[in-house]
Amino acid sequence: MAGEVYSLPSEIISVGQAKPVENIEEETEKIAASITAEFRIDPEFKSLMPPLDALAKEELVRSLQKEGCRDKLVVCKLDDQYVLLDGHNRYEICKELGI
Image (cartoon, helix red, strand yellow):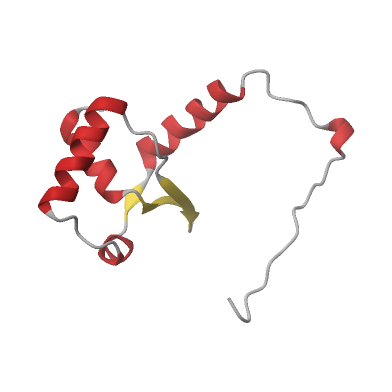
């Protein structure tokens, strides 16, 4: 946004110093689990998402039951808290289904 000030990271390491993650999927799951336990739903963001009509919700329920939640929830860190930006419908249905 106009007028916003961004700062550079305090520490930059060269590519040669970076350590590869041995199992990126396992690390991603650990991070996702910690974020999921701690993210909040902001009513303002949620209100920006149009509600699903009955047919779309039914199709989403069937898809989630059959394939699980394939698309990741979009979470952003704002003011030291993780906030759900996108995936409100999937999240609510997954909670209902125990996924």
